Length: 451
Image (cartoon, rainbow, N blue to C red):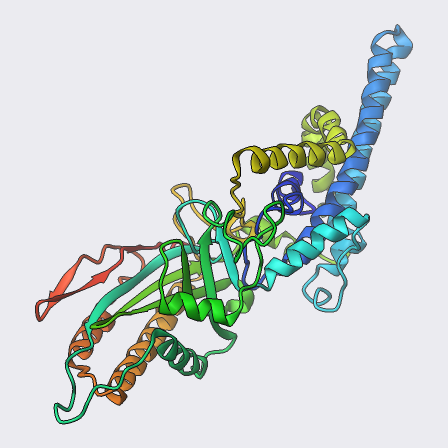
């Protein structure tokens, strides 16, 4: 937020200034802290831009003078460089930068919200950051949890008893969901959380009062267990509940998630899993870890030279930067007016989150493929996937047996899915396969282990 004004503005415009939109969940990231730092960085950068505008005016005045004008131009350029250099020093070694260091961050407080409007926006972000509803935009329904890395789905016959002399015991998707949640929650994996999450597209919720109580307001960040149970029992096309498993690895650098959906009807059980991953951050996001608490002379000289190279661009961006901060209220007013008109006249509005700052910060190559920092990170992704897969199948087999449903078909398919290994360090395309006349579909998974 503090080193790249474009990143800070994206967070402000697409998250804070969108009170009618959902906020994407970002596991292992405190979005409130991110937003507060974006506001603080934008304000500091606006002061820098205002001072640069003053030096530009001084330089323009110098152009209209004779010999003295040349001196004014040189003075203006020196002042402009000093302003850019001073702001950069504050960003790299100021009080806020010190609070972001690894040893200080856990106990440091984020910058305060400067206005009541921003306080309201922060409250909106905080509510969605801890909610159990994902209102997404676009094709990928697992917004904020990264990229789909694989999964499987199967349909099981629930009419064949394991013991023909005994009746089959009826069960519901809610009952199986509760059992899976308890069993997955007992996995011996650090930083594991299990819970139910509702996924719904932002274009489908505007006229649904379960999810948008006020048509002129934001979607609800939470839905109650009764609504989730109703959607499990009576599935709908647009609103789908998933049992969600989140595993945070490598001190928050890597987040692996599983989304499990259960659909029960009269004669079958459908089970669907989707696995996603949030990879480590891009190298630029580790800049604070490479800085000494007190800069060396070499670091200061390098920063001074870098500020000199950035000076022309900084002068060109100064007026837009000042305007951005000065007309923030007008920008919000125009956005508010346009959205109200859309809701009033067309009775529709897309409430899906615009961006995921955590996904934007992910380390990816020019082709968009995930790039890990260490080989073991790619191995750990496969490890947790297989551990969770194994627990899901063990629970399903035990549960069906308890209900006197023959689990033989499930056992055959589970052995095929678990043993269908993933190639490390290369591309994998898992095609459809069939066992015993029934198919178990494996979704395509591609990843790179480049360091």
